[in-house]
Length: 521
Image (tube, rainbow, N blue to C red; front, side, top):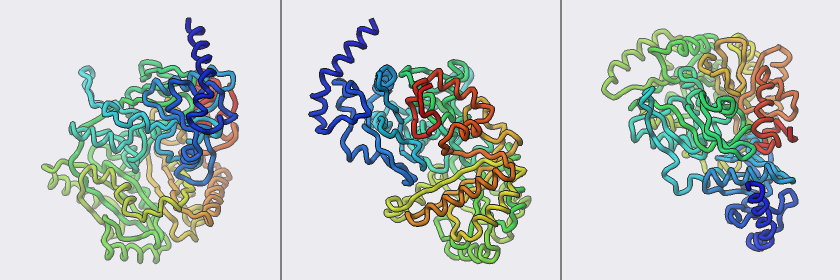
């Protein structure tokens, strides 16, 4: 019965193709099978060059690859239908689910294939974010569509006095996008990355199957998809853990001139899981990186700039303590007591009190104050590494004081540690195996068409240094082009990764822009 029904649908595809082509007024790309323009979904398929060009670039703006078509689904069933057709078609095509397109190396591309515009799922639908609770065990959670932005999830959960526990620094990213990578920020030392705070997922596999998975049900797919770079399925719903939301945040910037003291204090702070900071990050600053902002006054920024010029480079430890308004005085005292244990430069501690949502959405708030031309003309050759704690000093000497020495400004450079035990070892995301504490290094410069290749060359120099010195690093948001590199990246997880691909996406339809599997298995 199913085969006859599929044959009938295919016949309908073929009979209606010419009508569909006349409707969109373009030629059907050679890379797509005729039957794609089904009468039932033809209005959801965009073939015009204006649309495909829009989906041929990403946030990085370093490369370009046009899809043959853009698909605008109204429901997860629409996506499943598309994937099933691709999987059963003799002339299959690749599919990439795209949220905000915030990749920087073409990971969201589907060259010659179909890009699924995930934002279409949530348009005009208020039912895609729902806050609920379980009685046994007692827990609150939010069910959010994979296309939903984290900022919208936050707004909805705050209506109930609740909040997710783990974040990225920038909240205008999709749930499915960050969960396909890891989702990291300064809270991850305490709560783990976002992928460690998920109860359940709805996933559409590379065969077009719609599967609900969790730690207890279809657990191999659940762990595989989290941090799986979109290789095993498209996330259409995630059940995310919640906790009571704080009202206020004591936000701190502490300046260091000594790297050893800077990292020692960071490591001490992430060890204090009971009473301590709720958020810990850090940055490298050169003189031209320092400017006044909503946090630091023009007078204070000039003091910091002079210090950076004197030492060549300084380090900023950024921390935050969450609290309720009623406990403000007690929290202030606890923060002052904690500051006495730290080794920042005397007189260079800056504090500010803000709302909880104001703190979490701080990057977007600062971003909107930038010139509107910033986003049109700036490239983002970003580069992220995870490094074991024992090698962070070697990295500082060779990279911050060596390879990047003459970069002034150096751009946004993040440096902060994680506790490995907050990362579930079953998930696909790759992290260093050796030690219980590891660091993330994020080199996030803004570049022009003239200088981005120079910055990219520096990143390759950094990788060469790590290889030569035997540093067991892992790239976060990686970009490799050979199976050998991907095999090394996933290490002991590679065998399981391949097994999952063979089981859930054997034709390698999904997320071709990652370039992990370029031919069917």
